[in-house]
Image (cartoon, rainbow, N blue to C red; front, top):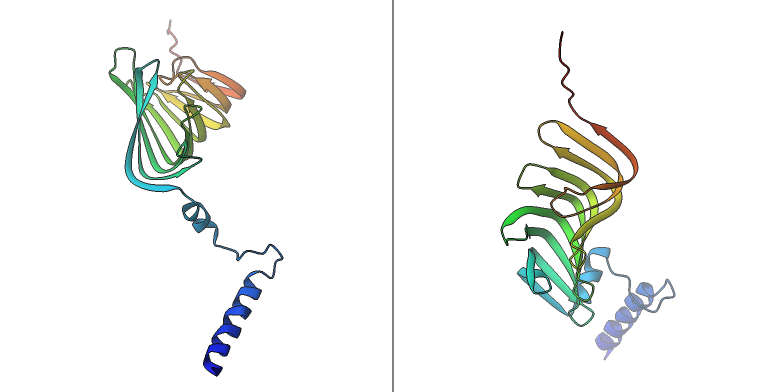
Length: 184
């Protein structure tokens, strides 16, 4: 009987200490909050990105946590392949993590985001959004766009198509490009 009372008292003390912040719940480490409340966890997922039943890309992730009746996916190690109008691969996106909202058909990529086009154009930023319905990339973060042979565009915030051909810089635009001058 004493042993049972001691275990109960010890458990009550641990619970009281955990709830000492007044919230009524025991605090959790930040990295466990997300997986603990997920409706589903999946490994090695693939999602087709379409517009009017036409494939615009393919989203892959190493790990996925599903929320909101499986309409929101929190992703780890994200890889997207973009397709052109003919259905051919013409670029890709990689990121450490992301959020894919299936209701909005929108992917937010975060952490060392890199978009590489087949012709060598390379965009680097820490955050960007791919909107499937508009078939557009946009961000309000700092970015660097390198274009062959030696052109570079930097700024804060942009809008572009996935092929990086129609780029609109929001602010602090700077461009560097080689200039050839004829000698007399």
